[in-house]
Length: 241
Ligand code: NAP
Image 1 (tube, rainbow, N blue to C red):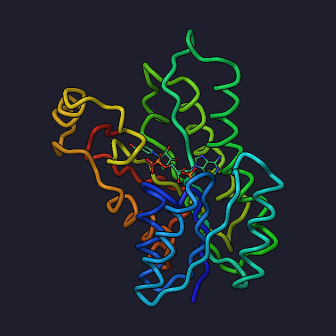
Image 2: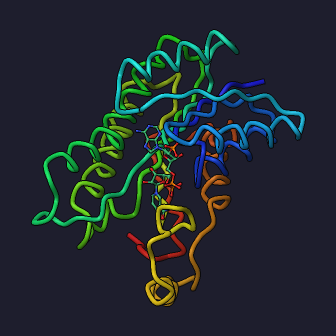
Protein backbone atom coordinates (compact mmCIF):
# COMPACT_ATOMS: atom_id res chain seq x y z
CA UNK A 1 0.00 0.00 0.00
CA UNK A 2 1.38 3.42 -0.98
CA UNK A 3 1.29 6.32 1.49
CA UNK A 4 0.00 9.69 0.36
CA UNK A 5 -0.24 12.87 2.41
CA UNK A 6 -2.84 15.45 1.36
CA UNK A 7 -2.92 18.96 2.80
CA UNK A 8 -6.27 20.65 3.35
CA UNK A 9 -8.06 17.31 3.13
CA UNK A 10 -10.83 18.19 5.58
CA UNK A 11 -12.99 19.94 2.96
CA UNK A 12 -13.57 20.47 -0.76
CA UNK A 13 -11.07 19.22 -3.32
CA UNK A 14 -8.70 17.80 -0.69
CA UNK A 15 -11.53 15.84 0.91
CA UNK A 16 -12.64 14.39 -2.44
CA UNK A 17 -9.03 13.48 -3.26
CA UNK A 18 -8.51 11.80 0.11
CA UNK A 19 -11.68 9.74 -0.25
CA UNK A 20 -10.88 8.76 -3.84
CA UNK A 21 -7.30 7.72 -3.04
CA UNK A 22 -8.30 6.10 0.24
CA UNK A 23 -10.79 3.88 -1.57
CA UNK A 24 -8.30 3.05 -4.34
CA UNK A 25 -5.64 1.38 -2.28
CA UNK A 26 -3.62 4.30 -0.93
CA UNK A 27 -3.01 4.84 2.77
CA UNK A 28 -3.96 8.46 3.36
CA UNK A 29 -2.64 11.17 5.65
CA UNK A 30 -5.45 13.69 6.03
CA UNK A 31 -4.11 17.12 6.94
CA UNK A 32 -6.45 19.69 8.43
CA UNK A 33 -5.98 23.03 10.14
CA UNK A 34 -9.23 24.10 11.82
CA UNK A 35 -11.83 21.51 10.71
CA UNK A 36 -10.99 18.52 12.92
CA UNK A 37 -14.47 17.03 12.82
CA UNK A 38 -14.62 17.26 9.04
CA UNK A 39 -11.21 15.55 8.86
CA UNK A 40 -12.46 12.75 11.15
CA UNK A 41 -15.45 12.34 8.85
CA UNK A 42 -13.10 11.84 5.86
CA UNK A 43 -11.08 9.31 7.85
CA UNK A 44 -14.23 7.40 8.83
CA UNK A 45 -15.45 7.25 5.24
CA UNK A 46 -12.13 5.73 4.18
CA UNK A 47 -12.13 3.25 7.07
CA UNK A 48 -15.73 2.24 6.24
CA UNK A 49 -14.48 1.30 2.76
CA UNK A 50 -11.78 -0.91 4.27
CA UNK A 51 -9.00 1.63 3.72
CA UNK A 52 -6.41 3.11 6.07
CA UNK A 53 -6.10 6.77 7.04
CA UNK A 54 -5.08 9.08 9.85
CA UNK A 55 -5.64 12.77 10.51
CA UNK A 56 -2.85 15.28 11.15
CA UNK A 57 -3.30 18.84 12.34
CA UNK A 58 -0.84 21.36 10.89
CA UNK A 59 -0.90 24.91 9.65
CA UNK A 60 0.91 24.56 6.32
CA UNK A 61 2.27 28.09 6.63
CA UNK A 62 4.43 26.96 9.58
CA UNK A 63 7.52 25.00 8.58
CA UNK A 64 7.90 23.38 12.00
CA UNK A 65 4.28 22.17 11.96
CA UNK A 66 4.66 20.75 8.45
CA UNK A 67 7.91 19.03 9.45
CA UNK A 68 6.18 17.54 12.49
CA UNK A 69 3.24 16.33 10.43
CA UNK A 70 5.42 14.64 7.83
CA UNK A 71 7.50 12.97 10.53
CA UNK A 72 4.39 11.74 12.36
CA UNK A 73 2.83 10.38 9.16
CA UNK A 74 6.02 8.55 8.27
CA UNK A 75 6.39 7.16 11.81
CA UNK A 76 2.80 5.90 11.67
CA UNK A 77 2.89 4.33 8.21
CA UNK A 78 6.42 4.31 6.73
CA UNK A 79 7.93 6.02 3.70
CA UNK A 80 5.82 8.40 1.66
CA UNK A 81 5.06 7.80 -2.03
CA UNK A 82 2.75 10.72 -2.72
CA UNK A 83 2.17 14.33 -1.72
CA UNK A 84 -0.79 16.47 -2.68
CA UNK A 85 -0.22 20.15 -1.84
CA UNK A 86 -3.84 21.26 -1.84
CA UNK A 87 -4.39 23.51 1.21
CA UNK A 88 -5.22 26.98 0.05
CA UNK A 89 -7.02 30.21 0.83
CA UNK A 90 -8.56 32.83 -1.42
CA UNK A 91 -8.81 36.41 -0.20
CA UNK A 92 -10.85 38.44 -2.65
CA UNK A 93 -8.97 41.77 -2.69
CA UNK A 94 -7.40 43.75 -5.50
CA UNK A 95 -4.11 45.61 -5.07
CA UNK A 96 -5.79 48.76 -3.72
CA UNK A 97 -7.73 46.85 -1.07
CA UNK A 98 -5.32 44.16 0.07
CA UNK A 99 -3.59 44.59 3.41
CA UNK A 100 0.02 43.51 3.77
CA UNK A 101 -1.13 40.91 6.31
CA UNK A 102 -3.57 39.35 3.84
CA UNK A 103 -0.92 39.32 1.12
CA UNK A 104 1.53 37.54 3.46
CA UNK A 105 -1.11 35.10 4.70
CA UNK A 106 -2.06 34.08 1.17
CA UNK A 107 1.53 33.63 0.00
CA UNK A 108 2.39 31.84 3.26
CA UNK A 109 -0.46 29.35 2.92
CA UNK A 110 -0.59 28.76 -0.82
CA UNK A 111 3.05 29.08 -1.85
CA UNK A 112 5.23 28.69 1.26
CA UNK A 113 2.97 25.81 2.34
CA UNK A 114 3.60 23.99 -0.92
CA UNK A 115 7.37 24.48 -0.69
CA UNK A 116 7.38 23.46 2.99
CA UNK A 117 5.53 20.23 2.26
CA UNK A 118 7.89 19.26 -0.56
CA UNK A 119 11.04 20.20 1.35
CA UNK A 120 10.11 18.65 4.69
CA UNK A 121 9.08 15.41 2.98
CA UNK A 122 12.31 14.80 1.05
CA UNK A 123 13.98 12.57 3.70
CA UNK A 124 10.85 10.46 3.98
CA UNK A 125 10.08 9.77 0.32
CA UNK A 126 10.17 6.35 -1.27
CA UNK A 127 12.75 5.90 -4.04
CA UNK A 128 10.10 6.57 -6.69
CA UNK A 129 7.68 9.22 -5.56
CA UNK A 130 5.11 11.61 -6.95
CA UNK A 131 3.94 15.11 -6.00
CA UNK A 132 0.90 17.01 -7.24
CA UNK A 133 0.38 20.71 -6.50
CA UNK A 134 -3.07 22.27 -6.77
CA UNK A 135 -2.74 25.56 -8.62
CA UNK A 136 -5.58 27.50 -10.30
CA UNK A 137 -6.55 28.86 -13.69
CA UNK A 138 -5.99 32.29 -12.13
CA UNK A 139 -2.25 31.53 -12.17
CA UNK A 140 -2.47 31.91 -15.96
CA UNK A 141 -5.26 34.42 -16.42
CA UNK A 142 -4.60 36.79 -13.57
CA UNK A 143 -7.66 38.05 -11.76
CA UNK A 144 -9.49 41.37 -11.49
CA UNK A 145 -10.43 40.62 -7.87
CA UNK A 146 -7.52 38.73 -6.29
CA UNK A 147 -3.96 39.94 -6.30
CA UNK A 148 -2.17 37.60 -3.90
CA UNK A 149 -4.05 34.47 -4.90
CA UNK A 150 -3.09 34.47 -8.57
CA UNK A 151 0.51 35.37 -7.65
CA UNK A 152 0.69 32.52 -5.12
CA UNK A 153 -0.63 30.01 -7.65
CA UNK A 154 1.69 31.20 -10.42
CA UNK A 155 4.51 30.81 -7.89
CA UNK A 156 3.40 27.26 -7.11
CA UNK A 157 3.60 26.43 -10.82
CA UNK A 158 7.12 27.85 -11.05
CA UNK A 159 8.08 25.81 -8.00
CA UNK A 160 6.54 22.69 -9.56
CA UNK A 161 8.60 23.10 -12.75
CA UNK A 162 11.87 23.60 -10.85
CA UNK A 163 11.23 20.62 -8.58
CA UNK A 164 10.39 18.47 -11.61
CA UNK A 165 13.89 19.24 -12.90
CA UNK A 166 15.68 19.05 -9.57
CA UNK A 167 14.08 15.86 -8.24
CA UNK A 168 14.15 13.83 -11.48
CA UNK A 169 14.55 10.99 -12.26
CA UNK A 170 13.09 9.54 -9.07
CA UNK A 171 10.39 12.02 -8.13
CA UNK A 172 7.74 13.26 -10.57
CA UNK A 173 6.24 16.67 -9.80
CA UNK A 174 3.08 17.92 -11.53
CA UNK A 175 0.19 20.29 -10.99
CA UNK A 176 -3.53 20.52 -11.55
CA UNK A 177 -5.16 23.87 -12.30
CA UNK A 178 -8.84 23.82 -11.43
CA UNK A 179 -11.32 26.28 -12.82
CA UNK A 180 -14.45 27.05 -10.79
CA UNK A 181 -15.16 24.09 -8.54
CA UNK A 182 -18.13 23.62 -6.23
CA UNK A 183 -16.59 23.95 -2.75
CA UNK A 184 -16.76 26.31 0.22
CA UNK A 185 -14.28 28.51 -1.65
CA UNK A 186 -17.02 29.72 -3.99
CA UNK A 187 -19.83 29.68 -1.41
CA UNK A 188 -19.96 33.47 -1.43
CA UNK A 189 -21.22 33.45 -5.05
CA UNK A 190 -24.81 34.70 -5.35
CA UNK A 191 -27.20 32.66 -7.51
CA UNK A 192 -26.79 35.33 -10.17
CA UNK A 193 -22.97 35.17 -10.06
CA UNK A 194 -23.12 31.40 -10.28
CA UNK A 195 -25.38 31.48 -13.32
CA UNK A 196 -23.16 34.07 -15.00
CA UNK A 197 -20.09 31.91 -14.40
CA UNK A 198 -21.83 28.76 -15.68
CA UNK A 199 -22.83 30.58 -18.85
CA UNK A 200 -19.20 31.66 -19.39
CA UNK A 201 -17.82 28.12 -19.10
CA UNK A 202 -17.85 26.21 -22.42
CA UNK A 203 -19.00 23.00 -20.66
CA UNK A 204 -21.78 25.14 -19.09
CA UNK A 205 -21.35 24.09 -15.48
CA UNK A 206 -19.20 24.44 -12.41
CA UNK A 207 -16.87 21.49 -11.79
CA UNK A 208 -17.07 18.99 -8.95
CA UNK A 209 -14.31 18.25 -6.42
CA UNK A 210 -14.35 14.63 -7.64
CA UNK A 211 -13.45 15.73 -11.17
CA UNK A 212 -10.33 17.42 -9.81
CA UNK A 213 -9.59 14.42 -7.57
CA UNK A 214 -9.67 12.05 -10.56
CA UNK A 215 -7.03 14.16 -12.31
CA UNK A 216 -4.87 14.29 -9.19
CA UNK A 217 -5.18 10.51 -8.84
CA UNK A 218 -4.04 10.05 -12.44
CA UNK A 219 -0.98 12.31 -12.12
CA UNK A 220 -0.05 10.79 -8.80
CA UNK A 221 -0.21 7.23 -10.12
CA UNK A 222 2.16 5.14 -12.22
CA UNK A 223 -0.30 5.64 -15.10
CA UNK A 224 1.39 9.03 -15.46
CA UNK A 225 4.87 7.49 -15.28
CA UNK A 226 6.23 9.60 -18.17
CA UNK A 227 4.69 12.89 -17.03
CA UNK A 228 6.64 15.38 -14.95
CA UNK A 229 6.68 19.18 -14.91
CA UNK A 230 3.18 19.28 -16.38
CA UNK A 231 0.03 21.12 -15.39
CA UNK A 232 -3.39 19.76 -16.30
CA UNK A 233 -6.33 22.15 -16.52
CA UNK A 234 -9.64 21.00 -15.07
CA UNK A 235 -11.74 24.02 -15.95
CA UNK A 236 -14.50 23.05 -18.39
CA UNK A 237 -12.68 25.01 -21.09
CA UNK A 238 -13.05 28.31 -19.23
CA UNK A 239 -9.45 29.21 -19.95
CA UNK A 240 -7.80 27.48 -22.88
CA UNK A 241 -4.15 28.30 -23.49
P1 NAP B 1 -11.95 24.85 0.59
O1 NAP B 1 -13.17 24.04 0.39
O2 NAP B 1 -12.07 26.24 1.11
O3 NAP B 1 -10.95 24.01 1.54
C1 NAP B 1 -9.71 24.55 1.87
C2 NAP B 1 -8.90 23.52 2.60
O4 NAP B 1 -7.61 24.08 2.87
C3 NAP B 1 -9.53 23.12 3.92
O5 NAP B 1 -9.38 21.73 4.11
C4 NAP B 1 -8.69 23.90 4.95
O6 NAP B 1 -8.52 23.21 6.18
C5 NAP B 1 -7.34 23.91 4.25
N1 NAP B 1 -6.48 24.99 4.74
C6 NAP B 1 -6.66 26.34 4.64
N2 NAP B 1 -5.66 26.98 5.26
C7 NAP B 1 -4.81 26.02 5.76
C8 NAP B 1 -3.61 26.04 6.49
N3 NAP B 1 -3.03 27.20 6.84
N4 NAP B 1 -3.05 24.86 6.85
C9 NAP B 1 -3.62 23.69 6.50
N5 NAP B 1 -4.77 23.60 5.81
C10 NAP B 1 -5.36 24.75 5.45
O7 NAP B 1 -11.12 25.00 -0.76
P2 NAP B 1 -11.11 24.14 -2.10
O8 NAP B 1 -11.97 24.83 -3.07
O9 NAP B 1 -11.29 22.70 -1.82
O10 NAP B 1 -9.61 24.44 -2.54
C11 NAP B 1 -8.59 23.46 -2.49
C12 NAP B 1 -7.44 23.93 -3.36
O11 NAP B 1 -7.92 24.11 -4.70
C13 NAP B 1 -6.89 25.30 -2.93
O12 NAP B 1 -5.50 25.32 -3.10
C14 NAP B 1 -7.54 26.26 -3.90
O13 NAP B 1 -6.79 27.42 -4.09
C15 NAP B 1 -7.60 25.41 -5.15
N6 NAP B 1 -8.60 25.87 -6.12
C16 NAP B 1 -9.94 25.88 -5.83
C17 NAP B 1 -10.84 26.34 -6.79
C18 NAP B 1 -12.33 26.39 -6.55
O14 NAP B 1 -13.05 26.95 -7.39
N7 NAP B 1 -12.85 25.80 -5.48
C19 NAP B 1 -10.37 26.77 -8.03
C20 NAP B 1 -9.01 26.73 -8.30
C21 NAP B 1 -8.13 26.27 -7.33
P3 NAP B 1 -9.42 23.50 7.53
O15 NAP B 1 -10.84 23.66 7.09
O16 NAP B 1 -9.16 22.27 8.34
O17 NAP B 1 -8.86 24.73 8.17
